[in-house]
Length: 120
Figure 1: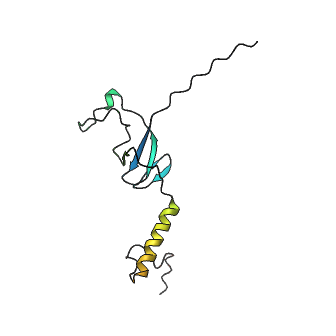
Figure 2: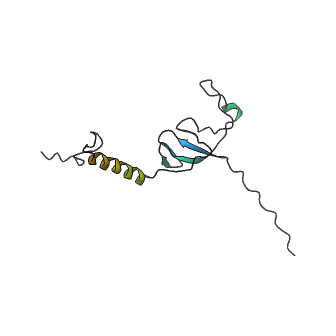
Figure 3: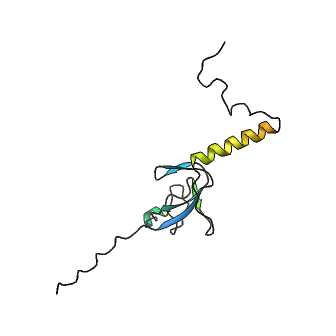
């Protein structure tokens, strides 16, 4: 009978935190838009990182990355990442609704001459 192999210990996994983006930013090489709810791998502050440069104190139970462009999400928030196609569909729907009401697209939201041909 062969001796049983001991199970290799699993590496310690960094704690994960559910956050909501309060501004557009990049995390894990992906654009996260305002309102997106997603998980981050948290790095908790060490004892010497609890006091910030401005003198305020960090919460030692929250990861260092919070406070820049993301906040801790409520426990009941459903994770959701806004895709670029969703943004395009939302903008197209807003433009179509504006035109259906007899309005026009606000200046600066479109370019009448995108190639710069001039047409004069």
